[in-house]
Length: 319
Image (cartoon, rainbow, N blue to C red; front, side):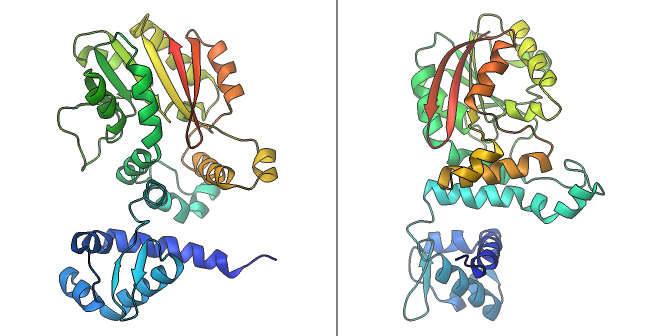
């Protein structure tokens, strides 16, 4: 039997978690590392006692692994707060909250994503970093076999993948993105403002040396208006970096039938991922079969395919 109250509880829980993060309550509890009273939190962060206490009680009741409350009514951060899974969920939901809150405008056409409504790029970078923990390790192992001198992280966000590869392999690390986070920039890592669909515009700014290109959860965004823009971009990379290796990481997409037939954590994650993409004018995640077909229609050659947890595939391509 459907527990209807869980729907409103889950909605409110996400909003409450966003509020605690935004007001610095989570980070304050992390710094203290001890059981802390509501009064102490309010005095430190200049917050309202009754309103904060209600929020803390709700979150600790619904999600005690993230926020603990003892018998004396004191709070401390839970062991689950810093897990990769929760950090991904927290920041992914923060990133797309502005979009979800404006669905009526987006669906009716009175508001346009990317203009009146924007996703939170900084939160998305944090979410991507958490999600790609295993992906980064897998890419390090693959790129380590390359003879390249420069690793270029396409759609880099915070640059965590490019920097991880750079640190382990000794390659010079460069990130390219239209949006560079205001916080969390990495030392000894070069950031370039540029459109990943047009490599010829920023190629001349790269350090000298043979290049290996990495793109994690980037190229599906070019599929919003069909295959043309993506295939055109692949052609541009073939021209700009002939003979180079490229590693493309993509979230495994599912058909509506597949999403409905198998209810598990993977398809639940895919459902929300595929929900927000059309709202933000991004192309939909594709299946492995669909990506193989796209590569076969392009001027670049697929030479390897590697699964990566929790629900992604790494494609190795020759330009």
